[in-house]
Image 1 (cartoon, rainbow, N blue to C red):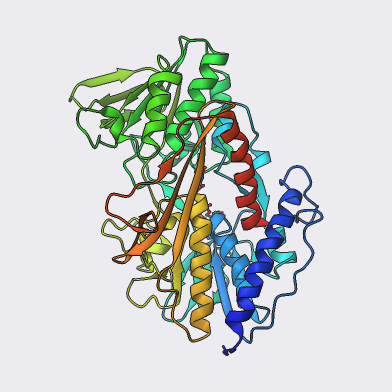
Image 2 (cartoon, rainbow, N blue to C red):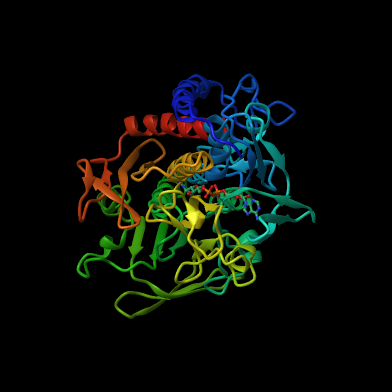
Amino acid sequence: MTQSKDILARRRWLMLAGASAITALVPTLGWSDDDEEEDGSDGGSNTAISPASTGLTGKLVVVGGGMAGVTAAKYLRLWGGSGLTITLVEPATTYVSNIMSNLVLNGSRTVTSLGYTHGNLGTKYGVNIVRAAVIGIDKAARVITLSDGSQLPYDRLVLAPGVEFEDAYGLTQTDYETRTPHAWRAGPQTQLLRDQLAAMPNGGTFVMTIPKAPYRCPPGPYERACLVADFLKTSKGAGSKVIVLDENTPADAANPYSAIQAEVHTFTQAFTSTHAGIIDYQSGVTGIQIDPATKAVSYTDRMGIAHSVSPQVVNPIPPHRATGSSATGWLAQAGLSNSANGKWAVVNVLSFESTATGAAGVHIIGDASQCGLPKAGHVANQEAKICADAIVRAMSGQQPDPAPVANSACYSPITATTASWLTAVYQVEGGAFKVANGGGVTAGAKPVEASGPSAENFKDMNTWFNALMGDSFA
Ligand SMILES: Cc1cc2nc3c(=O)[nH]c(=O)nc-3n(C[C@H](O)[C@H](O)[C@H](O)COP(=O)(O)OP(=O)(O)OC[C@H]3O[C@@H](n4cnc5c(N)ncnc54)[C@H](O)[C@@H]3O)c2cc1C
């Protein structure tokens, strides 16, 4: 590993070049089912770039080809230059975007339309793609073990494995896959849930659950409730019901909607006005039990009263944790899921390097990390860039940026044609990212949300989504 005096100047130039390239590439970004080439690349936009020769060398391994991992691999090449050996370890040949996947449930999109390949990482950015899963990490030897039995050494390791789902409410992983899908990782379960919704009788009942925070995509479950309600009332009649069982407790005991984890104003309006009479929102729910065979659901409401319902479709979103952080999981075995409850990887927010003992050179980004930022795809993309910047600086003998800034932006469809939005800027204070307000961190600062859903926002949502996916995968 060597240093170069002009690396920062070159990197600044590359950032600008990268930014214009993103704009230029967005229109040609291919979904995996329409204009994908047979080699898995995206047709027309996969010309190899010519990264600068920065003088940096070393082995960088990125684990996980989702929102965080692909962005990290791409920007490590753009900012780190041609001398780095960058390898992405990801078992799946196609990544299915969770973002927009709720629109599969009302028939607006298909699962295949949300597929992205890793072709550009290989052909454009010279990243080696290894089709395997990580099953072990030896931090002292700086080597990882893969599911195919091989081993891969690293100088720096970036882990972006997302989340896994706990067995909850009396359900198993097989139940999620075959009869009571959570569909909180887009793919076959999303299609199963869509099929179950399409087959519901007129005036049927749908029950969904929301786990206690932190969970992936704070507004996502409420967005799902809205889209399912919109679909059922237009396709299955006004007698349809969507029962939302939220395990989060209201911040204000007198207001049940104050348990909503994001866009409180928007979703309160949606539940009490737009979808009134269809959505029955219950917060502070405990003791949820689901029979996977009969789909009967029992729970206790926040007043302590027991209920049972017999819906046709049940959509449990179970509590989750960083992938590999079960007691026997590879992340836990390596001592990297070091939050108080053992479910998340605590990181230094300036570099996303793990704070676990003996974990120098191991960085953890995306939903698996604990850093004060929400678990969201837009945020995962931002974390990847802060991490890539810090790694390049460290390899150049420099300190990380002492004041990184991250942005969260998110659109939430409320009906098949309208959407709302949420945005926030985050700055570091006291070792964690916190919401900034008017140019600095302010106690009690909150993300900003749209005044209401609109068709214009829905249009902007597609622009935002294509730009984000282009920045990550193209
Ligand atoms: C319904 C829904 C809607 C959403 N909507 C939005 C939205 O509108 N806006 C937004 O910003 N976010 C949204 N999100 C959240 C967003 O999808 C996630 O926050 C984001 O995908 C996290 O990125 P990640 O890279 O950490 O994880 P992922 O994108 O899940 O990627 C993890 C990758 O790691 C791989 N992997 C796992 N284990 C291993 C292993 N052992 N070895 C190698 N690879 C491994 C997986 O195969 C996967 O490809 C939504 C989520 C859902 C469920």
